[in-house]
Every structure is written in C-alpha cells, then in structure tokens.
Amino acid sequence: MEKACTGIMRLPQELVATIIQENQKDKTTLRSCSLVAHSWTYPSQGPIFSRISFNRHHLYDNNERLIERFRSLISVRPLLATLVKAVEISPLLDAQLLTYTLRQLVNLECISLNLRQSHWHELSQSMQDTLRDAFRSPQINSVELQDGHFLHSADFSALIGTNAHLKQLSFSTISCENLGLDQGAHESSLRLSSLSLSLDDGSCLNLVRVLQTSVSLSSLQYLSVLTTQSEYLAEHASIMKRILRQLNGRPLERLVMNVCLGEPLSGVLDISQLRSIQIKLWWIRPEQHTKPDEWLRWLSDSLKELTRVEEITLEIFYATSLTAYNEWGALDAALERMLSLKRVYVNLDIYDSVSGRWRLLKEYPGAVREDMRSVLPMVASRGLLDVEIAANYPG
Picture 1 (cartoon, rainbow, N blue to C red):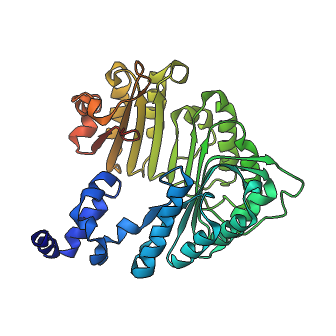
Picture 2 (cartoon, one colour):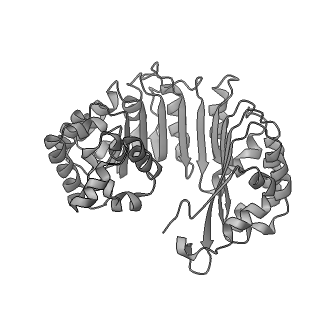
Picture 3 (cartoon, rainbow, N blue to C red):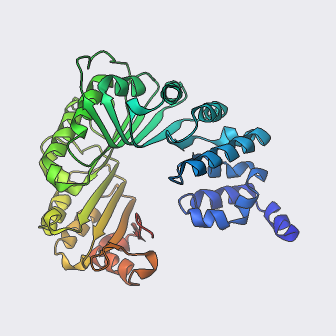
C-alpha cells in the first residue's frame, strides 16, 4: 500500500485532475480508483466533491446516515465543504441537520430537490423554512425540482421567485394544482438563461402558467422540453409555444427536445443561432414512431438551416435494427455539409421487448457501434462521430 501511495504522490497534478475529470460520469471507476481513496490529499481532486447526493437510498435512515457522515467529515476537513458546488436533497432529511449542512457549503451554486411525491403543504414548517432559505441564498444560481406537487401557486412562486440571482431552472414531474387569484402577486426580476422541463402528463400546464408570471424568459439561451407520453403531445407542444413566444424573437443557443415536438413547432422555433442541439428519438412503441423515416427526413431538412451549430447529440431509444431505416443517408449528407460542426454524439439504448426491460451493457451486440458508423459514413470519416451504448440505462 505504501508503495502504491508513493507512486500516486509522484503523479503530476495536471494528470490527476484530468483522470478524475474524465471519469466524473463513471461512478464505478471512481470508487475503485486509488486516487479517490486519497481524495483529500490532492487539491486537484475537487471535482469528486463538486456534486454530492443524499438521495442514494429511499429509506429514511440511510439518508440520515449519509448526511450525518458528511457533516462529521466536513467538521474534520472543512476544506471539503468548500469544494461542493451542487447538492441533491429531499424532505426525508432532518430539517435542522440539513440547515446546518447547507450553511457549511459556502460555495454551493446548485440545489436539486426531490420531493419524493410529497405535497409541499404537507411538509413540516421547519422543512419549508429550510428549503425557502436555501433557495433564497444569493450564491444559488441553479435549482432542480423533481417529483412533487404544489397545491397553491403562491407556494411555488414564493419558493422559486425570490432569488434574483437564479439563472437555471429545471422541473421534472412537478405539478401545480390551484392557480389561485394572485398569479401576479409574486412577480420578480428573475431572468432565466436556462430552463428544463420534463413533461409526463397534462398536470404541468398550470405550472407553466405560474412560471410565466414568476420569471422572465426573454433572456433564455438554453431550453429543454421533453415529453414522455405521446397522448399529451398537443398539450406539450402548446407549452413549448408559450415559452417560445416569451423569447420575443431572441434565438436560442442550445436546444433539447423530443423529435415528435419538432414538426409541430417548426413555424415558431428559430434555430438559426443554435450552437448545440440534442434530439431524443423514441422508437420503442409503434404509436410513437409509425413513420421514423419521416422524422429522419424532417431532422435532415431542419439541419440545413443551422450554420453555427458545433455539437449535435442524438439520443436513440429503439427495439429493432437501426439500419432498417432509409433516411440515414439524407441525415449523413446534411451533417457532412455543416462546416461548423465539431462533434456528433449518438447515445444508444436498446429495449428488449421479450424480457420487457432495457438491455444490459454486456448484452449489446458487438457490431452496434459499427452499424452506427455504417449509416453515417461521411460523419464517421471526418472523425466527428462518438457512439455510446447503454447511455441512459447501463443496467
């Protein structure tokens, strides 16, 4: 062990920092890495602690132990608290312990709150106060809300509309039931640069209406709108149109959306100034991809308008062979003509219809990456193609 540590000590700090940074998304590699075992020995290993989570387990006791252990750790090594930029929390934590811990994170910029299907008005008053105080902190510029319900619009507006420094907002499975009579009572000077919405049903319509009265979207640069249920496609397209109208003609720089939202929004979506675009293509259920070639054709035609885009990400969820579709050639040609393009990321996830689950990484055919290169040969020949398998569901 001592010899191994001596070898680590001799590594240049630049190399250590690069190794850690490149493996941030690979938690298995990080946990088995000897550099991580000596993490507080090296200042360059700060990225390990940049985002911490107290939501790894659903059980209350496990969450309590996680945050208590972290509190003990930063009391002994306070430098670690300064490295934390983002934290994932839930109402299952003790309010007093959470308050104390958040106050120690002096460089905290992002809070991700998973309400665990709770209604806001059912939380204890101490927990509500803790969360409101945390969201109001002037150093917080990014907030993520997941899996919860607000009975009154005033509660929602008061939570996210009181921090004038907030720039990035993300919602996933959040509903607001009662618009109330005071929609304009919590208007603020909040001007977002980034908005992410994950829409699962029609309950999010009220949320967007409240959002429009609580924040300004005219300075938006990044927009992500994803829909998980095709039966609500019209409502979700309407939501996106509401947001786009608030841009007042200002073009977006980054866009993430489902391909099924693309065609309904073609007339109101200005993509001329995009630098990055990410498209999700769900080809799992027949009702969601009755004409996949038409989607590829629409995508190819749309890309012709892009003159500044540098990165394109295609997230493809499918159950049959990718090579079965005829319009890959048109897409390949459209991408090849984009001189500004620096990278094309293709993230693949295969659904096994027989077993009713996503395939494990070890179950993927060895030729999957080559299949992707064969349908986008010109992009691959330019060295722009980056293919990742089991990207969202590694198993």
